[in-house]
Length: 102
Image (cartoon, rainbow, N blue to C red; front, side, top):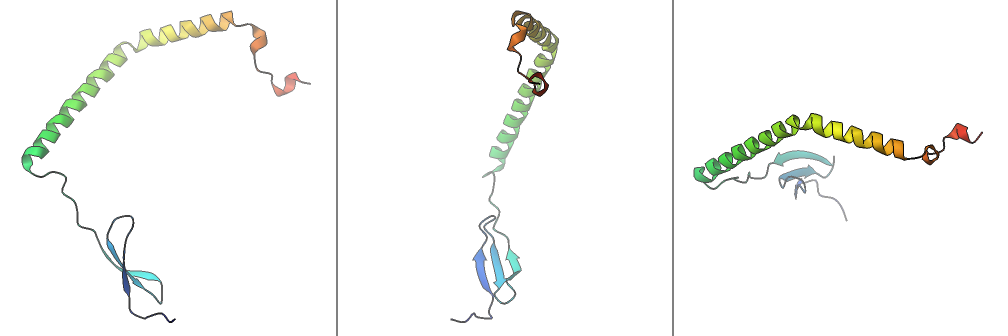
């Protein structure tokens, strides 16, 4: 069973394009990209998608502003809770370190 010297075509599993492979050198000698898929059918759909994206972006920005306004209060509450937990837990619950065994 001998190999042909003629290049053969293979479909790229990643991009869907056509690859022309030389069997002797085992190198790709040509690449034809896959046709691009249209994202939107018409301009109306594209405009609607842009408006939706703008609304979502504005909503996320408003949420981040609210989170920044409340950040100091939230961090103070978390710190107070951590201090309270540290005072309540006995010192013997600490994990043992390597030099504690010596």
